[in-house]
Image (cartoon, helix red, strand yellow):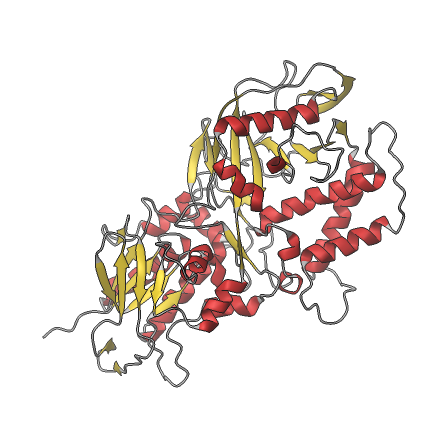
Length: 530
């Protein structure tokens, strides 16, 4: 009787899953010691990488940037497959070269050197302290200190104890203090989109210093982020990746710690893990690598009948508690195509940085919808593009998902009108000192938005270390099951990969890549293949 080859099933065809599959298949193809299968609940590969097209330009609905090209495996792959050049325009093809025009609510154009730059420098210095890029004066145990509270301390110290609310000359009802706080909030809201934290008061201060970035510039991929995914999948034979195979239940055996047959390196008994799919089918496996999002894992530990992924028996408390403590937020992108130039003398919409009154302020413009008030920028996806982009995080990002296109167009148009009407004229994307009095109106032909928060395959965008959690929880996320302290060779029934399982590169595509390699190598080492 011929023994069955061990079967490794990978749940999820995103960066982590396909990286693991690529590595395992590359080894198993020559050794023929085990089988590999990827099951994906959706109808496409890529996961939170989803390259699309809008207004004739290549855009990214999900992952957008290579965060630092020095040592990045994503950049290396992009170079190898010649994905960094394209004849077709793409999102952020000119990087971050466009200088922002900062305007305060009511149409007050701010001078960069006197109004914006000092607050920008303050914010950047504070974040450098939080990330330990600079010596910090924070003393003792940080405890449950949040990034938000640290930033507030720094801003309060900068503003001093002065209660003066003298209005700035020529700036309507804006006072110096209100303006400084509002400019600071612009940077905080940008940081929310970087981290996925709905509020920076929920972002752990101590963990911020553990997060690592690669050196060098941050770039987008000319041929699209999906080109990286397609490259990883290209070595896999037809049928190895199965689409439309949504796993609803994972049955595993925490008490089963069978010995291995050392002669052939294969399990002595039947496969210990059973996968149940939404169509009623069942698959048994020796090892399962779970690469679903932290949002889906959070849903799996809730005691409800949501139809989401479930573990039977439930995940052990150490794993469930780490899942519960870590943060997983929603970040969405909104693309809008201009139907005509915003002004007859303009060659392009400006890179607009918006300084809002606080949502509670009586000075706020009533026509600006609440879901726009924590949006930092509205800008072309590259210089002179007719496609504009805004980023949303937290409650506003979720609200965006439920809005009709007409509501979005009206809300954004009203916001633009408030900032640019009766203000200063824009010529070729630059501010001109000449005022004009008519209402500034733009027309949009169509909109496109991401919906990561309500997509049942993701339930959010990416992870962060929330107050009350720590980097130890990220390490716990990566621990395989069952946990056997007395086993010389752990059984490795369920393994975990994905950006939320990497202690120093969480929330990134390269973090997901590293995690997929880690779990593939764990199994290869298990079978003495590396």
